[in-house]
Length: 395
Image (cartoon, rainbow, N blue to C red; front, side, top):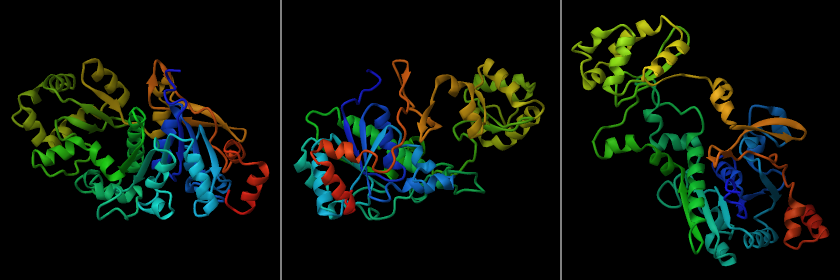
């Protein structure tokens, strides 16, 4: 199908927690066969993470459920010689291997790229780390909050009196995983295949800070925290109403003029403090106070409808539950349902719609080692050999 462009691609997912699993989940949603290779007895750490202690205890923590549907799971001790040998045999059948260990770990296990490409010269090997495979920070821990801090994101998040602030979700992990998925998809298009991809979460995040970075590199403007204000224009930011806050982006002069007129404040158009874009930017705080005096008189929904009809971009600031229940998201079918141990569970599908179709999670996140018999049998192991390896803790 056109909506399953990675059908026939086998991905070995040796990753843990979020950046790597999220990367591999995106590949799985696009049709790839993704096999999680997990540590016997424990598996992905995310299996015991999340807001529900009972699910954590069962090895199906919510953090694991979020990005491991459509995958298979096998267990393998990569420190054991037989485990190393089995991984090499599995690599021979794979197109892609993804890992997010600290740099050097796979080499110490004697399973680094130079070793594995001898098993499969066409292998696309993707290593996701906090700061890359070389450089003075290469051995630093790749925790999302650490990366957010070192990449500069926290310094520009929040208001001048509250920054630095952590972004409210694991931004670095997610952006790093998405960058890795993009890189892998690109490498799959190469002819001949076979490459080593070094994806640093910190660099992935900095890449997404395009305007902020360029304002400093090119314009010499030191980035700062501006709260909910858009530094390129005014009035452009978050404003209070009678009930919920709304965002208004009156970035063009004609939008500003329409906004002021609709609020009954034509006098602001000729006021010396607000006459030009630069005037409005310099006096944005005073301007917000004046506008909010009018905006607070009516509810957010009314203002949003009226302003958008006038060509003044506006939108409510929603909570996560409200966003998930919003008619727009629900109508486009981004949230799907899978059955996990008989329980119906809602999970996010692909953020991409291809040819009018969105790829959704179809199979539940796997139990630890759920596919041991199937996958290892495909490599020629007998059931007796599989049972013996399980007894020895290798599987």
